[in-house]
Length: 364
Length: 253
Image 1 (cartoon, chains in turn yellow, blue):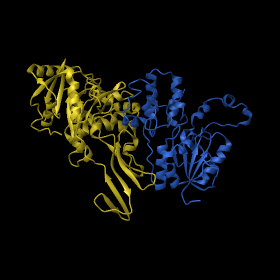
Image 2 (cartoon, helix red, strand yellow):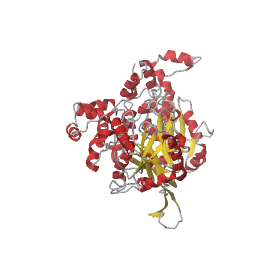
Image 3 (tube, chains in turn purple, cyan):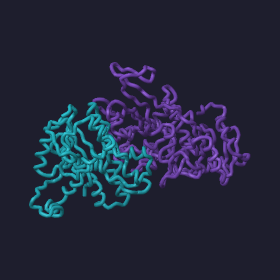
Image 4 (cartoon, one colour):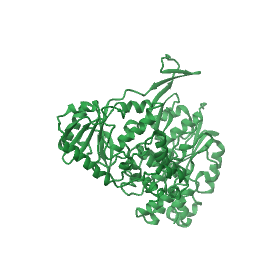
């Protein structure tokens, strides 16, 4: 994981690779580390560990689930436990009063791997997740995964179907947060180095030199892509507009349409909420503690003991998501909670679009 | 008999598919029998031990006066009464007869309708207090085990109240509604099935009944947008849980 002030964050040299050789480079990476990359799934794409370099989707629309799923898995086991009559108190096994319970940590060493072809919006989402998971109270699962994951990112020279990253300053070109960065220029890839670990990957395949023309071509393509983005979001005075329009009719419209199904949060690269529960084996003597992605769009999310629910109404929940993404996270972390990937817009079955909401508030 | 908690399984108007899920627990059935005494399960054993029972599972909907009497007895004999399956929780498929003239239904089903005295099909909760409900057609056997474990421990079972979409996204399925324009009921249907049908590229038909705080009206509008005819939309929402107040908005004609 790279800190923003890392001296190697800014590209310190670049090389080129003929487009036809990309698979060979990927195959070389796969020799060294497991490679997780976008592959087709039906009409969509998903991140999955490659078995063959030919599986790689080079030109893809945003994946169903964001690249976040590699770092914070949708479902993971935290530890397992078993009640035992006799055991050594060796740190793993504990006595709880009369009960003797042996805990087995599931935090096994994470294997180093490469996240390949990840787009600028998803890379920027990691910066948001780092704030949540790796600062005051580090989450060992996420931070370990993050630390062991090399990021080979890919700039978006073609706009995706519902992105508005340019307005959130999270794309279509990536500034930082990568080990290697690919940009497709017609029949050649420009590879920029973002870290020492990224530079080491370049030893795995022969590369050509990058020219200054390539660098210019990259800037031009990305500038053109940012002008052709399918969505835009009003950002000027958005914080004030949100604060002053808690009762705006736009929220009534959301309440009427929102299905409360939770899809928008499941596909969001910056949503980080999870639920923790124990699953016991049938003998009731052993079990596992698991965690699973949770969603503020679900009614039970904000329900507390004795049944009170802080956001019982669908409107309150629909509103909360947008306020949290566009206002509260900005306040809390100084960076936007929305990286403009457009997944929530594309995935919504009733066409709820937070860029429309922002536009309506701004009188657009 | 043993000192284990006693379980009874009562059958009403149903196909018995939910009872069968007890037997489909085969890999853990022996473990289960170590935890509870299945005292009344006519499908699986001829010996029936009398109540009272600690847990009474009720399968099937209530369709005639005799059912009502038996149901009240089952309620009286069971400490916990649990409705299992779409018939018991929502009236089930046979509740489509609630919108047809009863004479027409009788004649299309029975060779000699004189012998039958059916009423409309209603869920168990219409007549007695229900302590818990496991919906589905059939019920999900993992939810069944989760419920039994929780009942033995005296804790609230983790029965998913939210939409199928959550489990569908966790499985990273291609959205049948958004990507393929198919009328999937997932957004308003309770999960707990691990998104069984959408994971096999088949739209959710709604056997688990409504999810918590679902917005049927809005999904109905989405279906209109997909080009479905009004009568098709009505049938979609009347299939398993037509009597549910929220689903009546979708099932209106």
